[in-house]
Image (tube, helix red, strand yellow):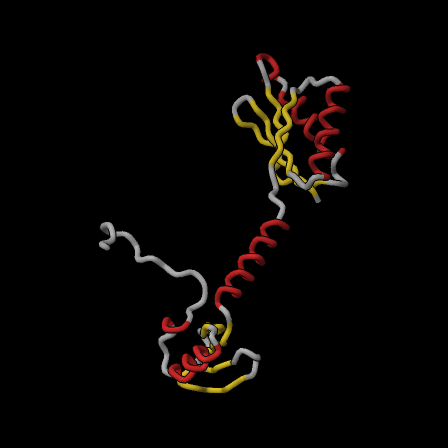
Length: 178
């Protein structure tokens, strides 16, 4: 079958095995884990065939390359399981956004701060956004005071990742958990 124009050749993932290993001599480790020493590739392939297993390249950069007689299907399955386990254990850090106004009421402020603390406990970053409307633009210092108040309040549990900055009619600050 002809490949489409400029398409890359299919690449095999995983270690080279059996006839894909193209070196004259290899360091062989048999199915029991015994080191057989430096042998020719043909002898190694015959031993693997007799055992009913595959010849798999373990360390391709060694001189000579190290190969082992084992079941390639089992190796691929074990690697797949290991990768799935690693993916399951990793935590994706999200950036949660909290929107406020510069003249926020004390009760509303407390509610927003409760949410901020909860986000930090979950391990997420928090982006605080202050929106200025109308004449509030004349009093940027109120917004700065509010962001500084938030910074002081969460100082024991969070650090400032991005200092407060003004973008158009919004002032933003990013906090990350310690």
